[in-house]
Length: 395
Ligand SMILES: *Cc1c(COP(=O)(O)O)cnc(C)c1O
Image (cartoon, rainbow, N blue to C red; front, side):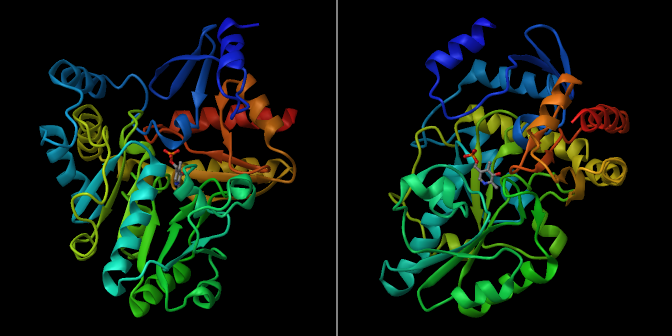
């Protein structure tokens, strides 16, 4: 057996059933394993590597920063962090941002901000938060507590408490849960891990209106669906809805671990103060150099328009596969965040796809998820179709 797989299986905590592949390097939208086999990558490290692998300018920007300084702590200002703060706020149309090291930490910060905001309003700490069934917000205790998958939470209860779960895309179910002590609603604009479910327009607008009427904060988790993935810089733009707090991560650092939560000034000035929140690494010069270069390339290459232009081709390719293969029941998604719902387990299809040189992932037992790098071209879509067609035929 491969010596790295042997080592990993012996020493890594067994929290993942990894596929038996050792990824060694990447080039554009392709990955290579340690035996030199090539894969067309429609997983992007779980919607992370938006700008593709071996991106020369991105790599150079990181190298330049490494030679200057990687870390300073947040006790001092640093150039990349200050520049990135403006760029992220501009991109998200928010006023203030806090940089984290991961998506889950961005959720933690957003939830803490909502609780502090409510605490300052009435001096009490018994507020509740409404989250959604089938949501996914991360694996730390706070993020897990608002994740709508009982199986993930079960062994780790009690969580942070005072979290209620509504049905996604059912406005009445949200309405029914709101009481005097509700302080926030948290949801993904497009549910990712839960099976790729975009918000209905009526639902997300209705939630925004409810929040406005009742004085609740709307936290939109755009960790997966943000950063251009749906053909909008942030998925909420499509609906003309603005959150009070937005969480960002995954594609924000193009592989460098970095996340953020950003908010409107009205929230910032009535919530967190020095001492309320912190992080040793968050927003360090290295991570923020990555963020800056990512956002620079988004502008220079107009990544968002690229996704929007190629979305019909991706959808058409997947629809073709749906029509051809009986095991495919549905195709849904937004932009480059697409799913094929199967009438069987996806594991076989994922394995056959990999053998045919295509990496895809799941989003639930029977949902095949495609979240390619945002820089794929028409050829790559055609190539994906051929390889996935084979995989579906063999499954
Ligand atoms: C991945 C993800 C998270 C958690 O991010 P981590 O970086 O894994 O902690 C939270 N919310 C959504 C919507 C995600 O897709």
